[in-house]
Length: 328
Image 1 (cartoon, rainbow, N blue to C red):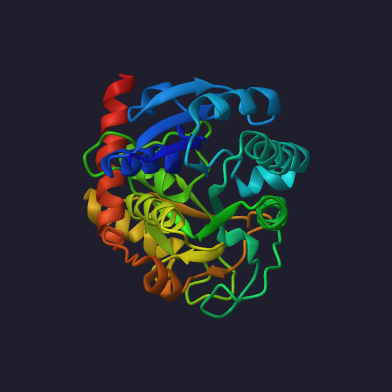
Image 2 (cartoon, rainbow, N blue to C red):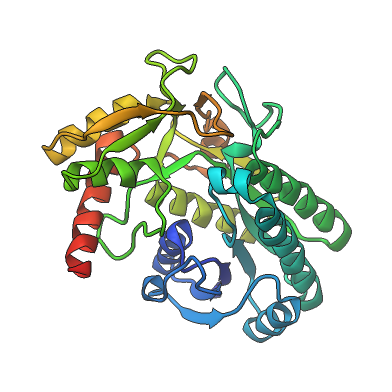
């Protein structure tokens, strides 16, 4: 029997890569996105329904018409700095939007969900982060993701919705076949900005903080290829379809790189120097975030295949060169 998956935020970065993974598994994909931060041309693996997750009535109509086996929920605002400056839009879109989606799922009797959560729910941790590490977010973005996790569990207990929550660490890279990639305006993410530094000789890459308690003073992050994240979402939905119970998994590699190391790696992959300067810290940034993904490997059979740093950066470099040509 063919599975149908309803993908909120499927016109965005991780959502579009995951839509491709679902389609490659032979599933029917329907994307629901208001295109405020997504892109119509990245919806290539199923139909697009334009709509807002805050519109519960429209969501309910769409879910009753599509009759999906499961929802993959990516629709969220996801910028730490923006959440510090405008927490109200994060609570409205992320928390109220997820409640709206859950209400629509109850009305349409959809009983399975995979939720795109975040390492930002953990806050500051000096240790390798497991699923049992205390969740103490230090920015509104992480706080909204944690609230959504709790809400999904409560709705699940009351209404029989089984869910998988995937707390992934720093997504990076782009589709190796060049069919989708990363496109944000403005661009807040470290890999695209470092690549811009290598591509554009007039652009200086700002490293936000050089006085953290890390080996070189810059933030340390665990980078995961976006195609590996997409594979984990496919595995999570397959797990639910086979009767798996509600659970949560970290998605990472267990290896962290500092921002300075990342800039050096971009220079190596690009064959061009990344001009850089140490700037002020960004509010809401923890010094280090590195994951243990042992549980995801054990339960979901997930092991990152493309998450070595050079592969992440090479696929991103190829995508951004293509994007530059497209915009000429």
